[in-house]
Length: 121
Image (cartoon, rainbow, N blue to C red):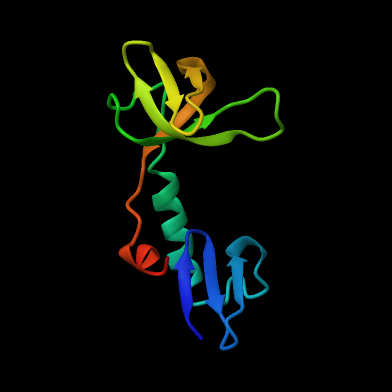
């Protein structure tokens, strides 16, 4: 049964092909699992990739993920796009929606996707 450590948990694939994703925070084995320390460390490493937009703006025209703070919705939204330095706005690729700098909490470079993901499609 293959087990993959993910940020803050693990993904287990049973012999029958069923996939279960477990979060360390809600796992019944919390504190007694040999994967927990690595999963929590990975979670910290991933979350540390976010850059506060009040501290630094992203490079121009580079693909990024950005976190929009929305007072209209109960949750913030992660979008995929780029930052336009001339207009001082974040632009989403899928919709061409533009958002002012003030509405963006943080951004991060788009992480690489493993070749294994592409080979399975």
